[in-house]
Amino acid sequence: MNFKKVQEEETEVNLTPLIDVVFLLLIFFMVTTTFEKDSKIKIQLATAQSSRAEVQKNVIELLIDGKGRYYIDKKEVINSKPETLFRAMSLTLDKVKETPSLVISADASASYQSVVTAMDIAGRLRLTNFSLATTQTERK
Image (cartoon, rainbow, N blue to C red):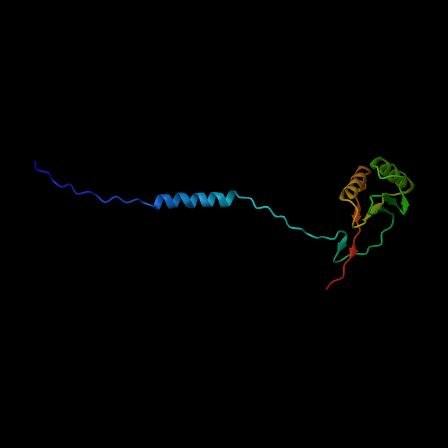
């Protein structure tokens, strides 16, 4: 028997498609990954760099202290319930001839909910002209 020696081809693995797939997976994971930021941001409420002092006529001042108690024109409202604040503001509005503007002055440690409640009640009473009072910080 005559055996011919068959020339074997050298087999090699083509890595180009594998590298393409790995890069696609890397891009996919980079795009879909969410990073959690656990930073502790220290902020001080109720301060501003500049303030405009405007003298307004017919102003109702609503004060909110650190415990969430409401004061209308420096008179304390009986309790902090929204219904009570609504009635107290309605009585104050009845004493005024024209539609007043409302200035909400909240303590820096007052809860956000207290301020939002005051703004909501102002909206229900159709007081569209209201502002939030701030204190001016010193510039460095």
